[in-house]
Image 1 (cartoon, rainbow, N blue to C red):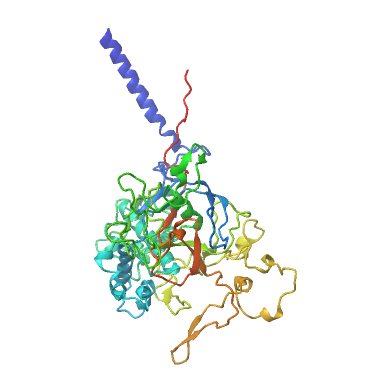
Image 2: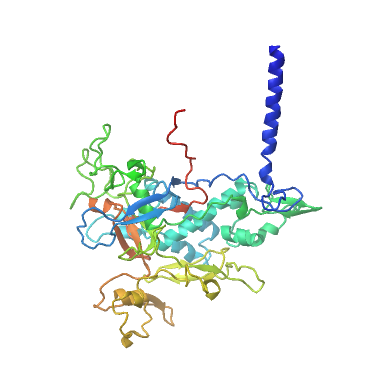
Length: 568
């Protein structure tokens, strides 16, 4: 009897399992129309199995939340440029460490491989990406060996890259986004293996937005080309083609597949400060137990942990003439920068958010954070653009014969857009007409720097200021006109500098915030709330950067469970 009952129960369990598994297919039916989704017969195709965003190479997940942004310790500088304000940050990802020399050299190597410097047309591309190694020079100090070794010598491979200005950091992040997505495209079988090595040159680079918008022109149009044996030259991976009737056509990855990662970028100031503070380790239920002074717990720069008690927790300048302490005892392990991960991470698992190098963030600098207008993902620097549509009605792509270079105020030349990327232009009235959330393309100056923001708003405009062609922020803050480098008829450089001695500020729409203390800074600057600024074209020996990435979908990675279970 027992064996019969056991058999019946087993059969019932099997039937129930089959029914459950069969019911799993029901989500493939649209709740809107009743039609099948992802049917082999055709129709709507969508990735219904997507769970959450993949964590990109080098990144750490930062769960968003509410925190007090700004300075709450004594303001010995008396500039009050980061007064406390409550902000909410969306979940995002940030680099575990600063971008290192090794990581940046990979970028330089790719540029040299794809755009050979032997070709005079491409020489400026590589030169524009090179860090300024001369930032190490000191007129009264001997550090000449660093100018020729710091960037490339293996001894400094895992040291943070320096000598990179804000514009170069942004371009590195753009390049990194495309290389990561290019690898994902190969990994998922949409393109054949090793395409990124064998089929890429100056005429056929991969760009994520170009691929998503006009996949047929990606890789320089090679996606529609056939090899000698009539197989697709690029899309010959297992998912690269599909059968339609009797024909074989290319199959492209789309946003709906959820495969591509979002763009790597510089973190906003709010994101950087939130990630540096890591208040998640100082939380009790729904409140923080206090405001951290540093990325680690405690009021001092030395460790209180039993095994490392007395060790310094960051690389910074102790005092005049003291960049690391007495050798062999209180030494912080470095005189200039130091290898990343030399100190413990904060509670988010992020390293070196204080000391080593200060870091560029995305924001345009202003003395006051306008939290009255926005307290959600605060950021100043939005410049909205759209794709240029060509005569064929399709998005235009930068051709390798139409490279656009820009000369910075210091004379350095850099390429604005790599070949194969989409041509963009500022948004116009088509996008702004009768909108309430934005009204123009360039919002760096929003609610600040315009005439309406000044105390002389009601006064008639100054006739002497007309025709100066100075940005509104220059007029408000009385900043100098940026230097310009031009060329005369004989090809000689002509440098124009604003030599006025009446300028009172450097604040313009081209200055960017940098955060965190460095190996050159006193402990005061290790406070994540501290903020400073420099023109975006300036590079130094103490500013580096790390990348960030937005998160789409859920705020949390781990599904929350009940905190309390009632007894029955």
